[in-house]
Length: 213
Length: 290
Image 1 (cartoon, rainbow over the protein chains, first blue to last red):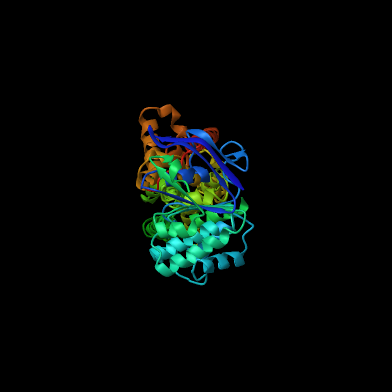
Image 2 (image 1 turned 60 degrees about the vertical axis):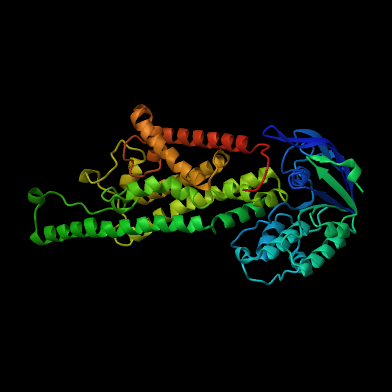
């Protein structure tokens, strides 16, 4: 698995939000994106996910150009900004509905994924009754469910308690053992040190070269 | 795709808007039925009893005509204001269940969850199918229920053209069905209304990105229908047979309904809607959440 980003540029209403991004993500590693608010972390994730289109440059996923050879990465799990699900459905029902779209995910896998992030799959509460932390956990569960090749997590530990952070961290680390690219945007430096194999610092829509470790 | 369609249809029928639209439509239908029973059916029957008991001859009294189902059905009954009220609210009721769903899902980011698991094309197609079916259902159910309940006390007979009680004349569209096959006439119009209910809901989807609030998205089809109605009525009277507000009403109030005009208007609506929907969503960025 390989994501190659070449001279990526994104302009929204005349404002350049990403400029001259060049980077290659390879499988089996966890990448940590950091930088101040508005530096372009989320925008970069949206571009990799195919949710927005670049103004210039290309994103190649396994040598296929995103937006040209494919409209979306074949196998991707995303949690960008706030986790949103259907209010009138339980956590399990929400995941089941999404999993039904990917026929490869079994009911047992959904249950396992929910347990992995510390949620009870038998919980009958509907999504609107979930606490912020539970919503975040469900968002992570949706992103990692089915073990996609690319996982993009934007602030995954937001609103999660200390115990939860450990559980989530472990779940993410377990996924990294395979040939998979995980990109995490995170403000928590400690968590970033624990999770990320490679850290990328962004500033004003660019990757700051010197800060790449 | 089949699963996605099933999910969208299921979702569209579990929204609050679906239940509200259904309740409003059925309330109008029930009120109309009660109103008709009290104000038309009972006095008419009393008159009938009087005619029978008094033994009036035709020459003295005139001919008494029994009330037929299409005189009593909300779709073609014109004695109460319910028909006009229902067809005035028709576009709004149709758009309520799922017309605003794209606005909501696009804005809150749920669309990203869906699109990352299927393609954009499939997502938009499934959304349109969900809106179409839920929009059609909420206008069909009150009409159908009203027809069934009305048929419980009014005989399912055609209206006699000589009675002068029919809103339809011999020249009007599907007049032979109206006079001879009332059930088929009602069913045909219910099918037309189902289709237009669905199309009105899809209009909301198509204009989703033109507005900054969900209320405008949902209200747009009604505003559009009203503008079309008054615009065509006063500015282009010769094109009144293409007026959607008239096309959907089985009472054929303007007497201008024509099958060819209906087909043309429907084809044009579907074509324009598809075009707007495709252009509006082609390569649209899924940006920041609202």
